[in-house]
Amino acid sequence: MPEARAASAALPQPALEIASGYAFGGPALDLGALLWDGVCLPDAQVRIPLPMLNRHGLVAGATGTGKTKTLQLVAEQLSAQGVPVFLADIKGDVSGISAPGARNEKVQARAAEVHQEWAATGFPAEFYALGGIGHGVPVRATVTSFGPVLLAKVLQLNQTQEQSLGLIFHYADQKGLELVDLKDLRAVVAFLTSDEGKAELKNIGGLSTATAGVILRSLTAFEAQGMADFFGEPEFDTAELLRTASDGRGMVSVLELAAVQDRPQLFSTFLMWLLADLFHDLPEVGDADKPKLVFFFDEAHLLFHGASKAFLDSITQTVRLIRSKGVGVFFVTQTPKDVPADVLAQLGNRVQHALRAFTPDDQKALKATVKTFPDSAYDLEELLTGLGTGEAVVTVLSEKGAPTPVAATRLRAPESLMGPVEAGTLDAAVKASPLYGRYAQAVDRESAYEKLSSPSSPSSRGAKGPDEMADEMADEVKAPARKPKDDPSVVEQVVGSGVFKSLARSLGTQIGREITRSLFGTARRRR
Image 1 (cartoon, rainbow, N blue to C red):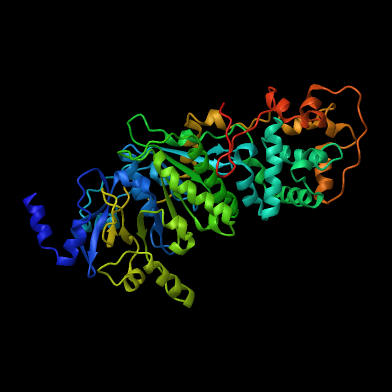
Image 2 (cartoon, rainbow, N blue to C red):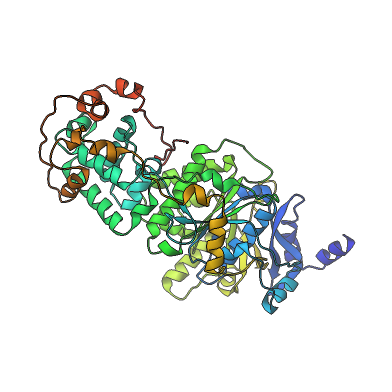
């Protein structure tokens, strides 16, 4: 300790003041060493207190500045301290966290510069893939649990169409018509615009033929792009993300998105579903010694692009409230201006990599970024354009919740493999997972489509079934009237117009029940 104090005392006065802001007494993650006047000062370590990781954060910077390696560095240390981590792998190069890193001259030099005791280490990891497209345990959601708000965002519906979609979900929830996959939703929309079904929503606004046609066309285009695989069963239980390994280290959940990176709106909205589902299920814990989960939301700007005010309000409220449930959320994007101000205000920890200023727009973004930082001893405009790869400007929350001084930092090197593991190794790890048998095989059980396709159901009393009706509605062609049938079946009592006139009766049946939905309209029926 005397040597450490002597070394600290030798620091320049401004650097000493910055370093003192990172001298935490409790458990913390080591980010790197302070940079001052172009010199790395390894005796001045920049850290982030472990309990403050649930106060959310932002990792930003231009392409190629080292954001992914920063995520890897933070994820490793969280796992080592028993905290589960979720990582969205956009480029397909985060899978290396499961394997020990490779020692080379570059890694050794960085470790020496920042006084890091580097040791090649792999961390426990589970690999997931949306709908099973790619290398990983399939992650699926039912349409019912995904909800109308998020689905409207994926389908790029306007506000009126989103409200109509919400009405469709409300109806299906009440009547026990489970929307497991997209064909279920198509069947319900087709029924509600048929002669038998259109009267059922009349008293609460109704569903116009034109709006139904837009929704069905959007669903048809969505399915044509191969999106149907993401909706179905078995539905992924987000509690899987909260597990720890047998040695006590936190499990790193890696969601591979490289195979669907050309569908950015889909994966960004699916990430929001994961967060919303966690929020829906987790109990309040208040301020804990360490987070239950830290969730890294990559390519965050895609979530906010084109979002309605109501959608942004829901994101803001989720981010604000999920902290008290022990979940930290880090948004990863290029500049802070990609994140709405109300969301940005909730983010207590910042790691800002280099920005480029080659164009007038770049310069405007640079000035806007500088304004989001507290006052500092640095010329941030000059500093942010001069940072090298693996260097960043950091400010976090102290153990008392106050912002630390802005610190230019040379970051540590990750100890796991900085790159993807081989495809064969990855596939073997996926098939060896205890979750593979639970989620790998898709299941298509009886749900809304089957109920409405039943010979005794109202939608089947004409010549056309739900698929044909939906196809016609997608072209805004009205389905023909259906012939009456004398003896109503049990299914008719559930979905027939007579039962629909009595909400109390339908809610009291075994099949009909209202689903409680959260901020995003998400819902889960636990199995």
